Image (cartoon, rainbow, N blue to C red; front, side):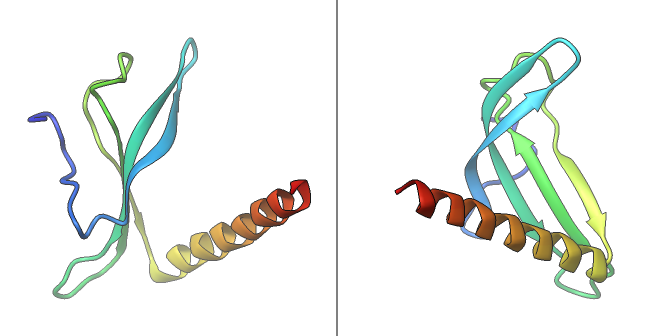
Length: 96
């Protein structure tokens, strides 16, 4: 996979997560790599990165998306993720 832009390794936050690429005239399910990180020395922002598996995606060229977040922005996203994770778990528990 020489086209990979983000290296999947033991330090990647999530590898092979389910993803969807959506455009005006397409919607394609794929696998993705997701990573949250910051520079080891003198970090000045949090990076949230994700990359769809370009081996299965026909509409987009190989690329990685990166969002640069201030610490308070990263915490806001983390809080929202936790809130929505709890809602999904509750809904799943109710179905069982």
